[in-house]
Image (cartoon, rainbow, N blue to C red; front, side, top):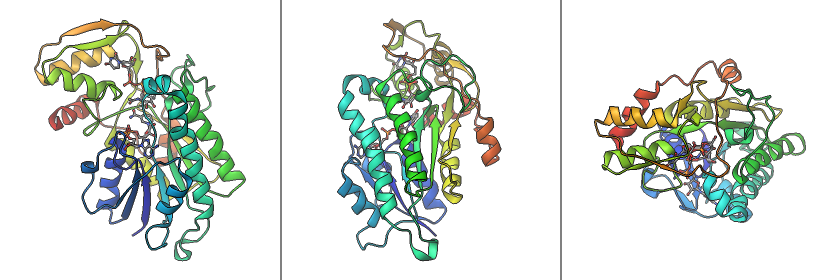
Length: 317
Ligand code: NAD
Ligand code: UD2
């Protein structure tokens, strides 16, 4: 049994990660400002501190715990996950997305692990993003592809990876970063305009409302089911690596936004009322990852077929 801090644990991905950690018998506590996350995403028994991940004192206290017993590792997921929001609120999202990550690494280097867990700085597994690649046209994207972010969000996630190197090399904090491609599944908020396209489309189609396609709808994404993703987070924590590695989390399979809308309408048995809106500024045209490094390192792939994951998502709504 290990004890973990999960920042952003009340959010979509965090709540699935915590479900998995609890099922494996681990103890979990959470730091979350509840800006997009919801307390009810987690069992009532999970302790949640409401606070800002960019507040160094709050992160240090969360890592120490109420009795100063510390943690065996930290999963850092707290961030403003919306590319659109990072355009509107540049500096505010930068605080959460980059300063927040530095606050986590900084606390991890001070908070020694329990001696019976090996001592040393606390390992951190954190969320980066495919947004670091920006408009790089080299498809599918390997981890060695050039990073050319098109958004403040992507730039800050790249900054997280650079600071992860500092955490590792200068401060001895083991870190593993995951460049998530487009994640979907139950508990992704269908009502927020800043949510992922699958939850927005699914929610609107099921409610009989029109959907808006930004631009021509030919933009392509690599969608991954959340339950596939969280297995990598726990596997990385079980086996901390040196050298601040980063891994794509992706399927390698392309789906256009138009096709996605059609499949969702088919699966839900509802008519598709599709409107065309303006192209989103800074929208990436094609985003497809190469999962080879991920599969080689962890021995498993993101195997849930899109239709299976979409059915489960629709059933949750
Ligand atoms: P989410 O919005 O559901 O979860 C983020 C959580 O962080 C929320 O609970 C929110 O309340 C919390 N949070 C935000 N700002 C905070 C702050 N300043 N202090 C403390 N808590 C704060 O989004 P998600 O999809 O679960 O994203 C989790 C992580 O994965 C994020 O780091 C995100 O950037 C990353 N990511 C997500 C996707 C995706 O497709 N969903 C893709 C790539 C990367
Ligand atoms: C997602 C993640 C982001 C990130 C990135 C990785 C969310 C909210 N964002 O950004 O965290 O790390 O993936 O590459 O999950 N669209 C429409 N109509 C809508 C909503 C979206 O056409 O109502 C389009 C949008 O213009 C884009 C595509 O759908 O072309 C995907 O948009 P998104 O916001 O779900 O995800 P993305 O790729 O911007």
